[in-house]
Length: 353
Image (tube, rainbow, N blue to C red; front, side, top):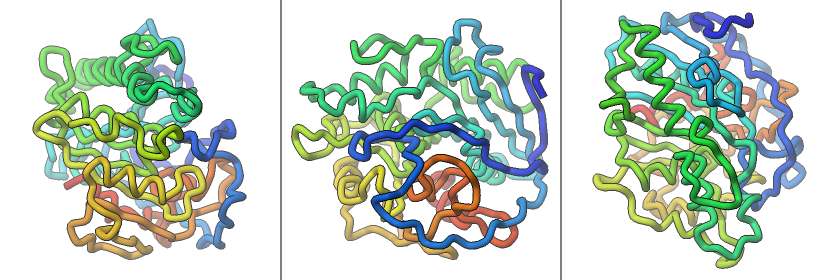
C-alpha cells in the first residue's frame, strides 16, 4: 500500500522487514551489526512461532516526509500505536529508537508491547545512517561521541564529523510527529505529550537498541524523562582511554531519569565486558546486581541490569546480527509457541513500570 498514512490493526502479522545492514566494526559501537556472528556461534533456536493473537490497539504508519517537507533522509515510516480504550491508559509515551541503519518496522513488537500496557508508543525513524562508534573510533576528541550524538538528537551543528539537518534529527521529528498525530487523530490523546509545541519530556519513556540506545542515553543528559531502557547499549567505548566515553559520566538532568539495561551476554557487536562498565558509569549498578533472564523469567529482583544467553531466533533471512538483536529486534527475539516475545515480561519491567 503506497498511501501516505496507513492505518491498520495489530491483527496483522508482526513480521520483521528485511534490512540490508552494512558491516560495522565490533568495537565501534555499531547498531545494526554485521551479517554473521563469527565471534560467537549461535545455538540452535526454537522452531518458528505462529503469529500473535489479535489485539485491538490501533497502529498508524506515517511517512516523515508527509509530516515535514524538509525531510531529506531516513524516509521509512514512523510506527505509532494508540492503546485500546479497553486498557487503562498510562498517560505516558514510549519512544523507541532503532539501531544503525535500522528503522521502526524492524522493532514493532516492543512498540506494540507498550500499547498493550496502556502507553501511546512511537517507533521513530531518524538519520542513523552513520555508526557513531565508527565516526569517533579514531578521534582524539574526548567529546566526539557527545557532540555527534547531540547533533543527531537535536539537529544543531555541534560536530564537524556529521551533518544532520533539524528535519532529520530525533527531537524535531518527534515533536512534529506528535503534532501531526494529534491533528490527524484528535480523539486518540497524542496532544498530551506536547507543551506549547515542544515535547513534554516528563511523560516520555525513551528506549533504544544499540546506536539508538546511545542516543537515548545522551537524551537523559539533556532532558528529564520518566524512564530510559537500553538494549545492547549504550555502546560508546573510548579506545584512547580504554573506558566509557566521557559523556557517560556526565550528570543527568534533575530529576535524574531512572535507567535500565538489557543485553545478550554473547553479543559480539557490543561486548558485555565493556557494556557492564558503561552501565555502572551511567549509574545502573555493579555487575553483581545483574539478573540473568531465561525464557520464562518474570522476577527481576529490583535490578536495573538484565542479561540473557537465550538463543536468538535465526529462522528469518534478516541480515542483521542475531546475538546483537536478540533482546529486542523482531527477527531475532525468541517467541513462545503462541508467537509472543519470550522477553515480554522483561520489557514490561524495564520500560513500562
